[in-house]
Length: 221
Image 1: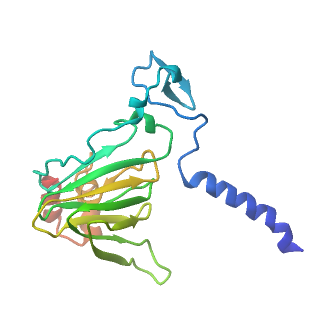
Image 2 (image 1 turned 90 degrees about the vertical axis):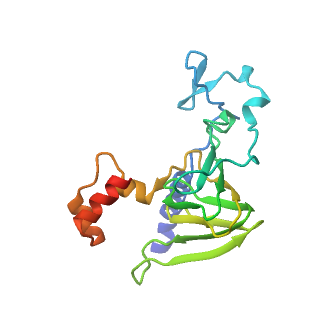
Image 3 (image 1 turned 90 degrees about the horizontal axis):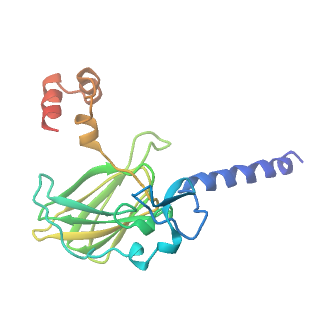
């Protein structure tokens, strides 16, 4: 009898979990983002372009297959396709990106706190992996694999992950996110390049490194 009485509460808990697991569902067909607030309508908590002035161009992004330059320290470039670049995506709960890698280029360890990532390799050979959260037995497990053109890898929401081009030719991948704004925290940049900086005492103890090394890393980032 007690178990049956708990069923309604379990059902309500699952409903609330589903409600908060992804971006909120939109309240209309679309809400094309409007940067000029004098021309927008305040709908669904955001400014939206007047639906009578919406065109198909608001839902089209050109050039996702065009390679991008990768002449930077990491040898990689991320081209986002979110509501900023494609206004028609606003409130739909999804976004995309293209990642270009130069030879031996790296998309460094990072995490998306608000979205799961699905990555499809367009060209090249990538060494990819992510780290699980704390296991029941303690510690974190590192899952890794080498993937090639046509392969798909999923990085669960919030996990630290990376992609490294192990080839001597350029590589590229197409990324989809389960959130309009998945966010990104690059581990090294956030740890050693935050503003204001994290205390040297905190970082030296956390990483068990000499404070001079921590100061060097902070200066680097």
